[in-house]
Amino acid sequence: MAILETNDLSIQFGGLKAVSHLDLKIEKGELYGLIGPNGAGKTTVFNMLTGVYQPTGGTIYLDGVCLNGKNPVEINKLGIARTFQNIRLFGKMSVLDNVRVGFGNSIKYSLLESFFHVGRYRKNEKVVTEKAIELLKVFDLDGEKDTLASNLPYGKQRKLEIARAMATNPKLLLLDEPAAGMNPNETAELMNTIRFVRDNFDMTILLIEHDMKLVGGICEKLTVLNFGTELAKGNTAEVLHDPRVITAYIGEDE
Amino acid sequence: MKKFTLSKPAKDRYITYGMLAVIALVVQLYITYGDASRSFKGLLVPTCVYILAAIALNLVVGISGELSLGQAGFMCIGAYVGSTFSVMTEELIASSALRFPLALLLGGMVAAVFGFLIGIPVLRLRGDYLAIVTLAFGEIIKSVFNNIYLSTDKNGLFFSIGVESKANHEFDAATQVDYIKGAMGISGTPRDSTFLICMVVIFIAMFVMLNFIDSKQGRAVMASRDNRIAAEAMGVNVTRAKMTAFVMSAFFAGVAGVLYSHNLNTLQASTFNYNLSIQILVFVVLGGMTKMRSVMIATIILYVLPEALRGFNLSNYRMLIYAIALIAMMLINNSAAIKRVREFLRAKFARNKNVGGEV
Ligand SMILES: Nc1ncnc2c1ncn2[C@@H]1O[C@H](COP(=O)(O)OP(=O)(O)OP(=O)(O)O)[C@@H](O)[C@H]1O
Ligand SMILES: [Mg+2]
Image (cartoon, rainbow over all chains, first blue to last red; front, side, top):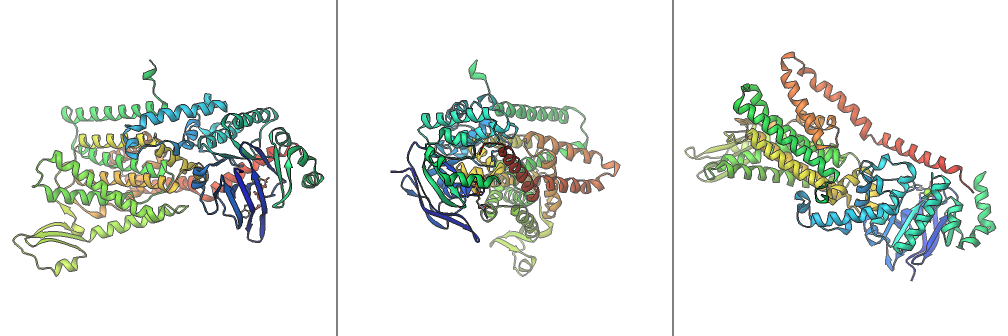
């Protein structure tokens, strides 16, 4: 069974059909790309998958559970975590704390234990801090654990967003333009990190990206959106050579 | 050796505790053995009350990122509940070592309940609604307590809001005792607030709040402050997080009110006016709105200095200067328009950097 399945997914903002009749099917462990020109509706798809927007039509199923009508908190608990196109870190918190927020629902202790730092607090905080540092190591951020998130350089902020999303222990990870603003070296490194995350954490990843080198390099399957509708879908190599896709992108450059 | 390494926030906490201990010790030695003036001694408990009210408010303003203008209202509730309790139980519980902690807890708890009731409708909303509602709350509380009458006689308890029903009530004159007398307030509260007790209470409050900030619940509050949408996407229940901080703040403001009222001959609701809420907010804002310690230091400086400078007649302008600084800082920090501009610029830069890429 597919881990994520949308049927006929649509949303309308006033008169604008931002996404229409989208069918996505993502299998467990896949690295799946969602591409398309600016304004095609890619981020809007993420916003529907994570409960930020409610679709005006169609269904979303995660691992057999219907997500329609659920709010972002519930959806995160059910197993979808995301990053944001316009970075949304907890700027005045440390790098470590950003990740520890992600672990919030996996540790259990009461408010009273927090007030006095007793009981389960100590053990759970120790465990969660160790786990957070392990995760930061994957993204090569452990050296900056005490830095304020807003003081990180741009590329590292993008990586911290992924680390924080991973901390919520998702089944499906959504990355919205993870390489935006990165130089080619950083992008190459990011590609390795994304592959590493998929392989070592058994993760299923759906990503939006404009950098075709990254898309061609790591995505196994693609869906191309244009004006909110599916233009093409299938294996990466085939889709990227599809004349309609090429036209859509060239059209955008003008 | 590894056992003795402390995390950064833990180290920071111990500095604050050390500072509190030093202040308590030095001041206590000075008033016991030195020649402290009457006016200096008179400032001690109020300063502590302001410190507690300010660090409690910082939990909402600084840590949770919400604007609250009703701190005086919660202090008023705490003061009245605590004083009424102490006056009524003075004979029943003779030992102030037992009675006063009970009064502190009770005052704090009733204030917390009010905080919860206000929070239910308001904290679900996005935007600066809390400021409006807490502003109204403070004014309403002040007016209500200004008109409360509580008496007993051999027939039992009499309670009314508004003087008419009291005037119409038949009291047994021989056994009548008036506890709360409308605008005249409560008199005869035992003077249980001492400087040392105040410092102990501040220490406990500081301990609980700093521990809270360094916990998963505290991190959830700060995450909700820094980015609500991202917090929700990470599974943080934003409403619950903000509610926790708000109720804690109300609790400690209530406790501050109890400390305050047990230092006065007569307690009157008119003390807890809008100016008081603003003054406490000023301590928080000028204390930087992040560290509890800075807020405490700002409170000491800003409260004690003008009192000491009273002779120079500067206090007339105090509120004016406060108001201007406050408005400027609120405009810069909290305005939705400026937040939007900031976010727009950030998005713009992200997009521009991307334009150079392939395809
Ligand atoms: N909340 C909203 N209200 C109205 N229109 C919206 C809203 N969100 C998105 N849109 C519109 O929906 C369309 C798709 O936007 P979306 O952000 O999903 O594009 P995108 O594919 O992510 O583009 P980009 O590559 O620039 O990020 C755009 O025309 C956008 O203006
Ligand atoms: Mg987008």
